[in-house]
Each structure stands twice: as structure tokens, then as C-alpha cells.
Image 1 (tube, one colour):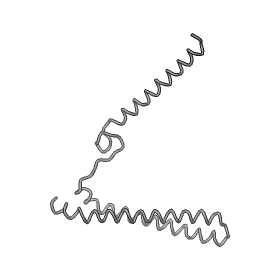
Image 2 (cartoon, rainbow, N blue to C red; image 1 turned 135 degrees about the vertical axis):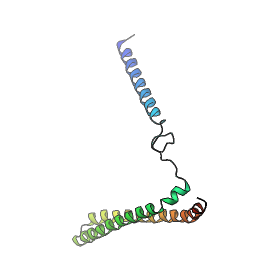
Image 3 (spheres, rainbow, N blue to C red; image 1 turned 180 degrees about the vertical axis):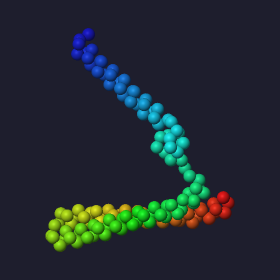
Length: 132
């Protein structure tokens, strides 16, 4: 057998062994109990309806904090946009306007998700509190 064939076989076998070892370790890492105790790494255990209802105040506080941060950022960007427009810097104006558009989209997503959550709370939490 030629030396080049032997080297090719050796390199191929090392690559195969390495990929098998990497795959086996990734597979083994995914089978232990994760933080949620569901048997997979990185997942969170599902909360009961009562636990979700108990977190209403925490969620409302998080939404208020997030809305405050978004509003602060939006105000700062509006000031920068006005300054860039006054200076006639169209490139900066376009970039800042794109950021403001993303913030508007984010704000709409927050409102939509929180509205969906409030609808869910109205439908589930009164019944859970009465039975729980």
C-alpha cells in the first residue's frame, strides 16, 4: 500500500473518531436533567396555572420597566434625529430613523404580547383562584 493511501486512511479515521466523540458528548449533554428537571438541558419546567397567576405582579412590573427603557431610548433617539436633521446629515438621519422604526416595532410587540397575557389572565386566573 502506498504511503499516501495510508496517510489518507489515517486522517479519515481520526476525523471520523473525532466527529463521533463530539456527537456522543453532545448527545450525552442533552440527556441529563436540566434546570427545569424535564430531562433536557436548557429547558424550563412548565408552571401550573396557579403559579402563572401568582406571577401577575412580577410580569406587570417587568413590562413597565421595559416600556420605561424603550421610552427613554426613543426620546434619546428623537433628540439625535433632530440634531442630525438640523446638521443635514442624511446618512445619520437614515440610521437613526431605522432604529426608531425598530423601537416602534418592539413597542408594538410588547403591547401585543402583554395584551395577550392579560386576556389569558382574565380567562384563567379567576377560575384558578376560586378552585386553587
